[in-house]
Length: 91
Image (tube, rainbow, N blue to C red; front, side, top):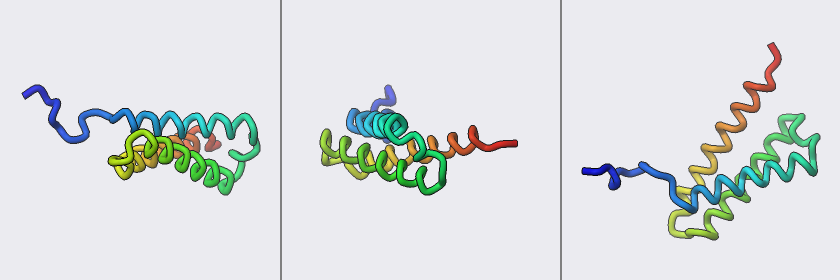
């Protein structure tokens, strides 16, 4: 067995498109609305906009797996937000 039939062994192209779209949405918001990432409400707004952009792009590529791609994008954004808070926390 070569391992190619395992569930979750690789990310799909639509999941990758969703992650890239979410990242691009955060980058664009960072350039246009730099003060958005200062407050907790701003981070939540940025997270929601990035989630919508990522899931929309992933669903446009492959609608049959949009639920799986939404979970990939959500997990990616949760990891980014956790990393943001860990880096920005003052000792």
